[in-house]
Image 1 (tube, rainbow, N blue to C red):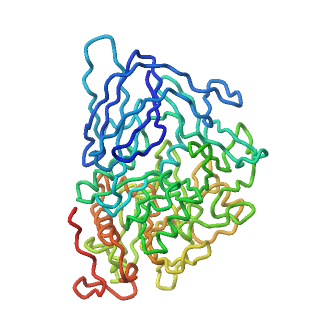
Image 2: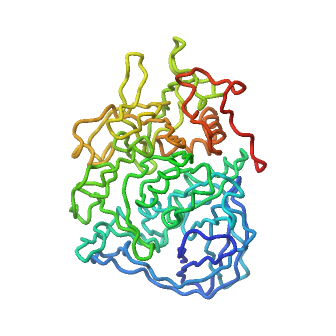
Image 3: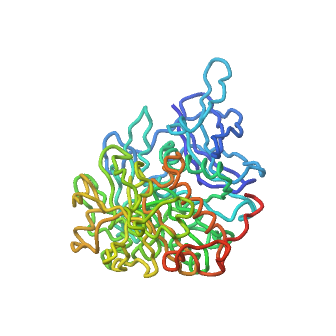
Length: 514
């Protein structure tokens, strides 16, 4: 049995990567792979002596379960990352040495990427922005929140959701559930959302650079070298510093594409020199909620929440969306988004109609699981023309243009069956701000912010399940990967179809790296 985790999940090319490994084998090595158009083998280390260390026991005495809150303290091994490694998300596979012949290097591909005995890390460039002006943020805090630290040989069920550890804050520490980043967990979400989308980006000629949530939290200058920030998949947990940096980036003309959902739902407080975080959430400890209302919910008013609705940044919120039952990633509707404003540049080249020609409106992604596993929505109201518009009642910017809607039916107010929002929503906001609807749209306020309103946008795109969703993604990336000198991101709906030759703010020419 072999497991490991990284002291830090990102490293600048040419610097040192520290991996913490526990194994009952006499020796082990690491094989490195890079995610791109395919999973590419990059390098291997030499053999290192193996040391076995058990995980720390649960501090509340939960029998058979490890602690999710403590650094597991496994032996460190340092590896020099070559200076010529390309920016990207890499996977380290932990390989045990047997007693027989030299083992062959394992082969990883898209079908075998998920599993234990491996972890991911990000390689950042020495010169940020030189390879690409698009920055892909891996939602690493959310990954850790759901990481149970399980292994086929040991079900530990230790996470922010399974046997969490709560600290009351009486000693001056932040109050809430505590989670260490220094625990093993293998690869799950990376294989489902990120790897297919990264492969699609490579196939379609979009170079990108990468960072983790911790990079964004710590580095106030991180976004200065980029024009477009990508949030991909499930991006639930944000620190105040992360949010402030992204809001400042947008105000300064930077663009953001939230190809994600349940986005910026909980605030976190990094602790222990940023190797752990605390969040006051609504997760049970045993059979009880240790503290309600949970005060790190972004949208809820003070003192019962942060008082800064995520809508003001993303345009949407999980409280107006929902999630689907069943085993992860769950069942979900296959109806797609009802198209609005088909003359907008986002739909260029798709051939989709919005019903304004007298026929029925088309649905973007119809027949695919585009809506779900979780989805976000804006407070909307339908006008006499049948067009949904954001009301702004929940904090969504006034300029937010609703481009696609999926009404969530039926609506059940039980978070533990068919789910919408959290228990916080019907408890704290009994009067609905509008129909519960997954919402796709954008607004411009300095830079342009697009929201897909669904976790599974990158999965549908990456797996080539819908040509129109792919074309919308190309339109989005081509338009926003360079900052616009004029606020033209929301034109097209009010002004009619945009003719590229006549557009006074034409898209910039392709960069030399495309």
